[in-house]
Length: 162
Image (cartoon, rainbow, N blue to C red; front, side, top):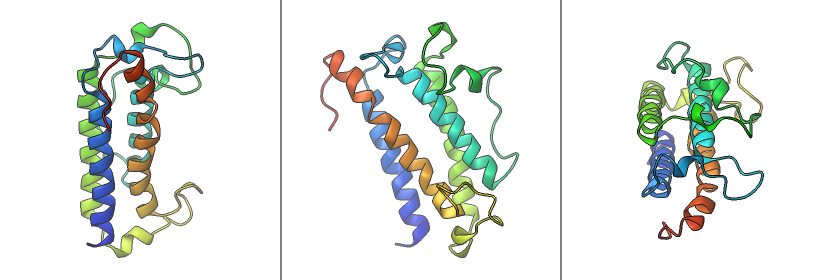
């Protein structure tokens, strides 16, 4: 197994966990704030998709699909309260995530193992300073947020996913 295989496996594992946590949740469930200070799943999904777009655009400008108007502003992590009507349906989030994830996987397929060490002349963020680190961050970022979905699942008394 080479480095690209490891990154692909991390992304696929992250997708598996994310989808397991979303299983059984309705559109309305995505808007639940189970505890004070916890953002609803809808906000977190939108943020994850926006961040993934940002990562892709750092590596291959223009590769990502367009978002619905106002999408990024509606899913800013700086915004913790507000009109929940700004959120999309679960199906819409999953469609956007699938389209954006395809871009990430296409980028991964297009780079060589040696390209994974490319720093893009220091233009990548300090927390992920290489192409490989950016691609791996996609999996780690999704896992970070999806773990928070457990609070909603428990509040709704849904089966334990793992």
